[in-house]
Length: 353
Image (cartoon, rainbow, N blue to C red):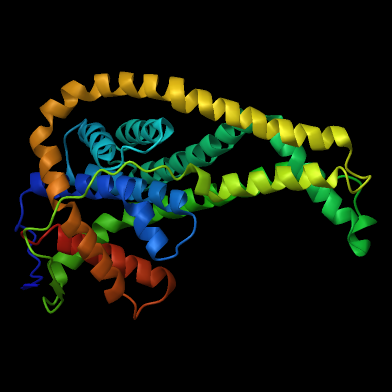
């Protein structure tokens, strides 16, 4: 591998190239960040991916004075996501579209930058949480949340020092509230963080001592493959729900606290979910995906050069991110995150590729 010096120069690259690289970073986070996070054993991948989207939208908006830049970036990201990750569900494309529209609306004006970034973070992460809850409710029905309540209260009633303090606890409501609360807190944090990154980045680029170095992968690296793969059956949420339903069904024959009707409802929930997923994956999903591809066909031609350029540099971006993460291991907690984000962005936005 050839070694290149990182020599930051605020005027080294035109604004258009910087924006294109930020768009490519957003596309990378949507198409491949989940895999990278799994490699680092980082939980809450969906939360991190959506937080990254907020950061990149803020950076794109801060780097451009033109209206419509975030919206155009969103279209390109959706197209690249479809090329790199054709297995992504339609809901994922809808989420990116929603985020792009909100980013365009909220970040048009730079008068109240912190408030705009904060609002974008909260709305984006709240939408992510609500979408997950709605999806589970549509697929499994209200029986899912009833099963959570039944199983939770069953466990509590079998613990002597807890059974006397509660008649019935609404575990599903607590679970949903905590889940949404985590996303709202994350939205506030990422909104404030994203608003400050442009200033940190400018300082890093202009004031760096120019001693930082990084190895780059060869220029002839292969473009990422678009492999179709189904991971639905390995999703933790699906495994947990299947175990919950199976446990309730079996327990209805073993413990009087759980009635046979409750056990049958849990079994019916799985049958319902199987039917809905079969209908979605064999009929509705392919039909809607066909309509979606028809809608973006023209846009794919319009942005062909930018899409190909972004896909070509994705391996290099991924390599820089991985090296920057390893290079920040001497820092801890939030300071490491700040150093990693600012340093990797400074390299990506200033070095010739």
